Image 1 (cartoon, rainbow, N blue to C red):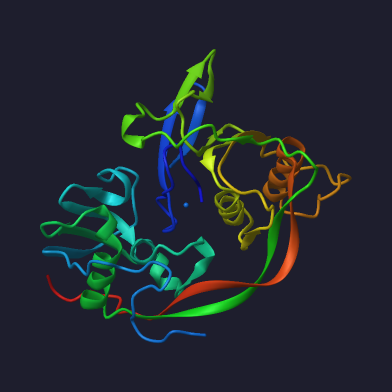
Image 2: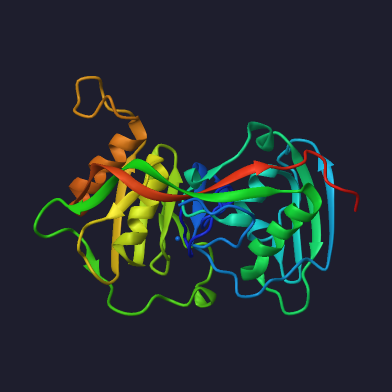
Length: 307
């Protein structure tokens, strides 16, 4: 998940994230901006839809793989009254349609990652960005014959717990800042080194081999969700810490040596969890049979109906 200088959204994962990439003199900087089977095409039970909108007009055309020079609108192709995706995979569109809690909370066929489409659509009067998922879902049903269902699957996962009596977390002093009042990306460069500004919201900043995770007015459940995206497995908040907290921790993406504890873990996983424990006083431990709602894409046509 990548999360979010600002608040939760990702370009590739439907549950929360839009990705901003800045190319500065220091190199590439990535900022993630701010988280029993039910058969048939029913509304997502985890995200009830209050307004059942459809796009007023929608054009869907076959396209080739992205070139990197496509039109970039605001996050997830949305601008007031319009939705546009250029050279988007079918898999990307279904993620936007269902916004699963975790990226691993959706299963679909391999061809859906290599079939690309360009979508141009007009929102009906009164519809907003919050209404996009149901409109995209209807579009995929109407134009591709999308069929899906939900399943609750038991997965091996983790629980987030307190590792020492006084975790290095600061209780948030006041309400979260209004995102509309925060100027800029939340990132500034000082002496050639990117860093977060004092007004930055929750997010993750990556540059070179360094990663900075910053939380502002964040519940531990939200941090657990971020960790889950990195581990590729569900993480349950078992800290017992109530309320919202501010925190920052930093780690590098260099792998541990073969002699270090945890060297058999995926490098990014080991270093993230090591930093989490040393700097915040939190750790994860393995658990079994974590229930996860999974969206199963049963079928869809490879070619949409005519515009």
